[in-house]
Length: 181
Image (cartoon, rainbow, N blue to C red):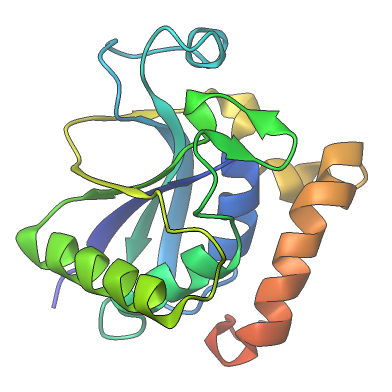
């Protein structure tokens, strides 16, 4: 079976990239932009909220080793899918919660996962996560790539990204990549 692509938006892409980089079965994670109307937007343009894009990660994964549903379970555990256009102190449409599906199967899985989460009433408020077809993905600028790995001492990384990585490691330890000796 061939690798698949998942494109997810859940706040700052540095957080998502840092977590999904550690997931067994994930071959590549790339920060970027999706869901807008401007071709090849820059970070500055996306932050101006004039392009309609969200900060996303595009995850290349082996569905034999990690399923799309498992990726969504991790995704929903590391961001707040009930706040519209916001994740913590990060506010703006670029920080919205969204799943940009690349197949009808992914769309159906996303709808089922969201329905189950709403039914379980895990959060006090309903999920506002968008489910939209992926029309285009634009890679982020080079300085955004592997940001947490390259800047672990930076304040945002210490206080926002690191706790999300720690939460993933605590609750999904069985899904972590095995360390190379």
